[in-house]
Image (cartoon, rainbow, N blue to C red; front, top):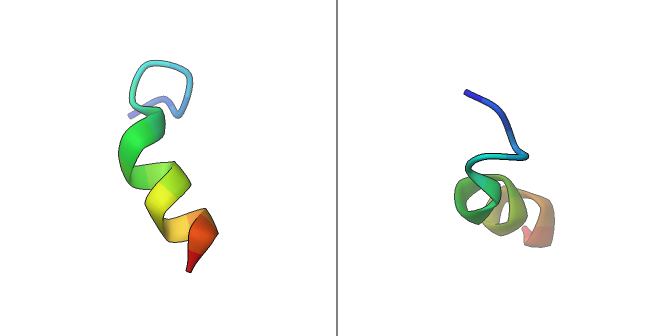
Length: 16
């Protein structure tokens, strides 16, 4: 999984 391709889950986790 690459945050570049799937920023959605990573952004959510980063927000938390």
